Figure 1 (cartoon, one colour):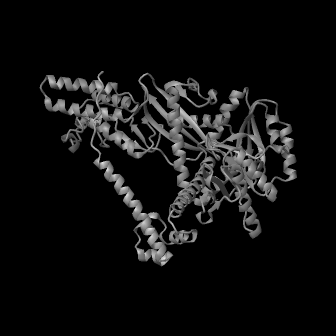
Figure 2 (cartoon, one colour):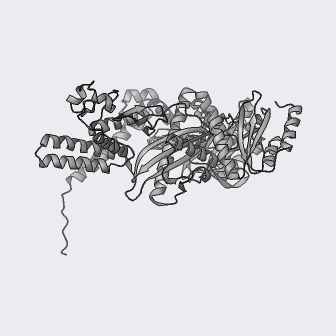
Figure 3 (cartoon, rainbow, N blue to C red):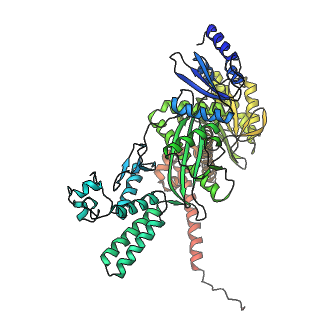
Length: 629
């Protein structure tokens, strides 16, 4: 931690800072820069870190505790401070600033800067004058594109030095690739460099997403071959056109009216940011990938998006399309010559939504990986999300949820499900038969169930939950909360209501609903708990209704009392099994006389059903007369 002497020294340095725009750097004990920030007023901004303010986040307080020294750079304007800060973050990579978390390198397709350029796969981006295309989201996609290119164009794959001088010396001979038609033999002078460069130009256009030049070229060659009756050659060109059509169909066509543009979307979740990039050429998506970043301590979404766009631009050889779609505007001073826009409707909005969907899917994949590889970390994150969204004092590792079920007031029941660490603990589930409420009164039923549940837990000295979820809105929540107050538990257990209509969350002292992001893990856990309570309660209610129906059926049999009905149900469970039972089997349970009554009762019912069926079959088929129209 920072000693009082060090704090005094830092404050003395801060007092000497100018009231000018600039960039400041905080250094740690080892002399390394741990944070870079920009300021419109250096003195005012830097001094705010050393004030005893309650609004500092825990992360900022930790960083301040590690500051050993500071230095600054004065610039003319706030825009220049933004540019300088961006460059310093990228070059220094301070611990507490925005950082790229991706530790992998993406695959590229490169057209080498050499005589008779080769088209290859690479993961190393070098400033050597070569043309790089990508990066691609997966090696599979990249290899598929390379195979399509080599199927359309006859390009060399060898690593020979094909300078004009070397070819003129005649050191090489054609290889198998030439004999099977995959290469035209530039190594022995059978293809000119001009003709080869023409093919390379069309390869570059194709990789940029423009298929028109290649399609026109192949169509012309096919027509010429057919006119000269070189049908084998025409057939080869036709196959290449089919390959080109397959390549084009793999692009996601968004709209024929859209031109070329880049699309960026951003999601920030639990201290991690995900940015998706999509390149659109002539209305078709030709490239897309998502990168992961770690936002800095005090970085706004605008800063994170600016850094992500700049990083992706560097990967793309410093080139962005003239039009760029974004969810909100980044720091435009960093990107001269680029027009950013936030679409509000139409095809461009749908394009941005497609990018956001890809971003969310990438985030979900990451979360699933964490859940599989590190379950404890996954539980901690989910509990922290619930604590944050519901404003709880502690993570809700133990949650209980209540739901009522009845059919027009008949057979009222309730259910209580228990979740621990976000997962169901089925052995702790409980059913409740409503005893004191008559008719369909969900509010009173909720009051009874909550009273019975927590009175018993208090008597037994059992563990209380950190959170109660009530299936319903303000009414059910109010009755449940008043019950907790009577039991003296309102300060020990947090309680919320979750309404079904649009997943509104209600708090005891707030009449207005609270809306959680529908894509958040916190809401998904709450919905899972609520749906499980509903399922468990409905299942019990159906069983109880079925049992009530069976009892009423058996009570119609003469001489059969309530005790005999209970015995039959305990033994046979269902009406169909009782009907199929023999006289001896029934007599073992309720005696021979009552068993005979049961058999006569069901036999009489069967006779009535048989007579009704035969009478329907004997009725003549009467064809209705058609009315004259």
